[in-house]
Image 1 (cartoon, rainbow, N blue to C red):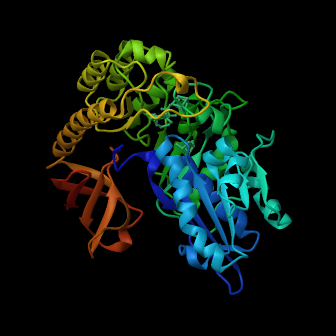
Image 2 (cartoon, rainbow, N blue to C red):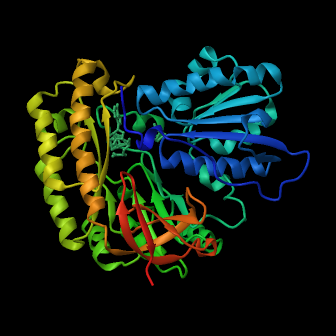
Image 3 (cartoon, rainbow, N blue to C red):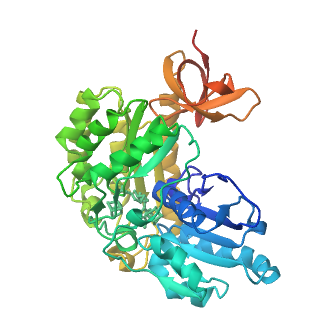
Length: 456
Ligand code: SAH
Ligand code: SF4
Ligand code: F3S
């Protein structure tokens, strides 16, 4: 099934904490990250935790002593990719028997011992809430599995990232887990119940990141706008506190649920200039019948009314969404309602997926639509979303936008940065400007990015 190349849950990245004071004789750790940004953040923290145990990161799997696959279970394709990657690693293990291979993340949580059975080369299976136990498991040496949801907070035990200077934009996990139980989704089972980290801890971590060069923070959570710590702090309160950190220029958060979009958060978008005008607010479907079958607990009209309130507070808000097509029982009329909703909202960008039945979820037992119906609808939906995205990008041409320069671009002499609306912007600029917000005039719009020049 064709899925968009930019699907957040099917991307693969290396943990980006670079070697930090590398020394000879250290063991080498290779981490491959699948899935969402929460996994990217977790991978960084695992790299840091294992760094304290004598492992230094490598980007070359062949030279690793320990390989961790930090996995995603959201759709069948994402989960099966892990097994094909494990197959590809088999020759490495055969050539180097002391190599240890671990599966972490949501496939580890969902499949547990099944992984050890299906892939005998795997030594360790560790679920997302048990990462702080990884160093001890490695020390014990034997094949092992830990998919507990321990009462302690893993982040209290995982050291923060290296003390080295950081890239200008960083993630910070504020909330984990989900209590929503959408009928299609594995996350409540793989990540457990909604838990919010204390605001004071997050503030301290944010200060530390800013001290190391971070100028843009993205607060993460499966339902980050459901954030509420034991002291009663909400996401809006957390954003306002973090906005007080000198040197921090931009704040984002993702992913949000429509039912948790509080008035105080909407107001923060009107009042807090550091809070960027971009909101990923998945709706999944525009049909009330399907929304009900999905257990989304809101209607299409509720969502549209919410969008109106958000746009009243912040008229230039760029909206992003997730859509599932071909959910069991979806008729052509239901699908048309989704297209209508998309037309009504006008998305700056969006992710869309063909429904994939997931073991253990309520919808798994329902009649699955034929694959051709799903792929045909997905193509039509993506054509509309691509048109909207292209129109949105084209409308930026000629405008001057503040762009946070993040890293070297694809061509020599080029840097790439982000607009407030999360467009990638490529422009010629001196590399010493990385980490600075500059004014850039947009000169051209491509499919996924903008080109620009420094505005004098
Ligand atoms: N917490 C976020 C999304 C988590 S998963 C939220 O509630 O919006 C990211 C996206 O994957 C979902 O928004 C949904 O569009 C998609 N997804 C989840 N389960 C799926 C499934 N079984 N089949 C197809 N897409 C799915
Ligand atoms: Fe999954 Fe729904 Fe929870 Fe999002 S809100 S993580 S889609 S169960
Ligand atoms: Fe995937 Fe788990 Fe994230 S299933 S999308 S890695 S929460």
